[in-house]
Image 1 (cartoon, rainbow, N blue to C red):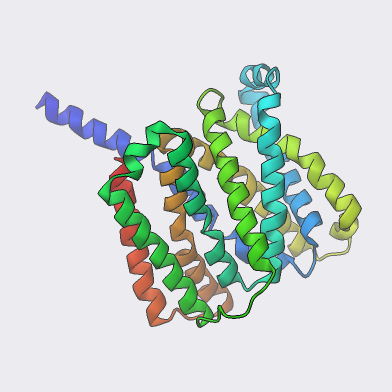
Image 2 (image 1 turned 30 degrees about the vertical axis):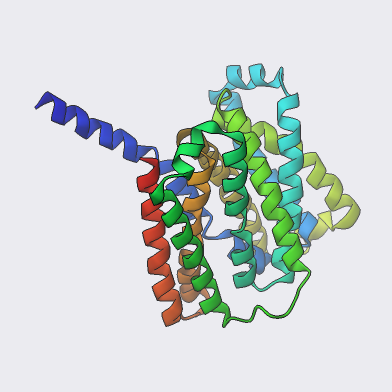
Amino acid sequence: MVVCEGQERGREVSKKKYIPIAIATFIWIWPVLFIKFLWSYFDNYTQNFYRYLAAVAILMPVNLIFFRKQFVSSLKNIRQFILPALLVFTFQILWVQGVYLLEPAMAALIGKSSVLFVILLSFLFFSDERKVLSSRNFITGSIMAILGVAGVIIGKSGGQFGIFNHGVIFILLSAFFWALYLMLVKRIVSKTDVIVSVTIIFALALPLFFVASLLFGDISAVCKTPALANVILLASGIFCVGVANAFNYKSIKLIGTSISSNFVLITPLFTAVASYFIFGEVLSFLQIISGAVLVAGCILLLRAAS
């Protein structure tokens, strides 16, 4: 009886480790929709600056109130956060530019190539993830998830992938830089508090976004746009950048980069559902079938990590 109760508690604890990535995944349903709404009001550099400003503005007080000791201690080794800050800045500029140039569906599909980069880099750099990566459930689940994403997006875009657009290059490059960024994040969160880590990295990246906005953007755009656009801009920064990344950091610490990245493959399906209610876009039969394959693949990935 005691053994059974212990096993039950163990399963509950095991399930709880997926809560952070589940929250991050839900939040990351919305960024492409927000960016496409905001593109007519803000250029790439200005949008990114204000979104990261909002994220840092919400994360910094949390650190100073609840994690002051860890925050101050981590600043003594601030050099470890510089490269991740440069990578997240590069990723964000490239990704948003790609979203601007491409249709949302195609951008979302190509962006998921980051999973392939994450898998490769995780295999090369982290011995603790090689066992999961080589398991049958992980391999099958990854293939199903990637095929599911492809089906969902192709069904949404009508299969119009024949025309080359420079946005493809931006998205592919952003995917690679995102994967490199996650590799460094995994190392950092193994020895530094999650909230402290994400705050320092974003705070170091913020001046880069500020300078880019001054040089190439229009930092005064917030004074010229409707209040609703500014609210969405700041809200997307707080939740999609600040809160979601904090939960993603926690997930990386709990279940690793590969499983976290593969789990997020489910976001295009729910983005399509949200798009139906917001823009009246109807899911095709191919999308429905592909969505089922995608969900099944993510379930296998969870089983591989458990």
